[in-house]
Length: 126
Ligand code: FES
Image 1 (cartoon, rainbow, N blue to C red):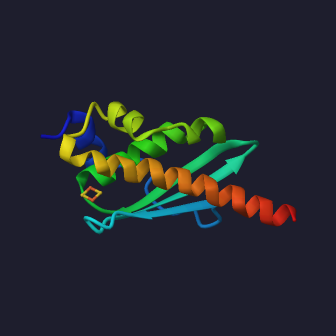
Image 2: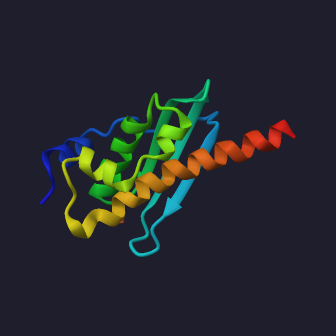
């Protein structure tokens, strides 16, 4: 049912954990299944220097979190904002149709972390 890539990322997820002094944190939950995902970002010179995640969820939620952090690392904020759920699913060689909502969670959490970063920066700039 799952692609080889999904199983790889599920078995050994990349970029797991928190960034204690993160510049932005995104949290999204799926009300249907109850899964929750946190994405932490560290920004330097307009690029995502580090991206990490903590996910309490299904196989797809963990694999898509892992993949979205891989895709986003090193990208500019604008590039990372353009990462869609389809990009995540494609990079994982596809997800079962019933699991597509899980990839939405990963892209949303990344975008929420970027939003949080922008909000905080605006706040500190006065
Ligand atoms: Fe909840 Fe996959 S079943 S995110």
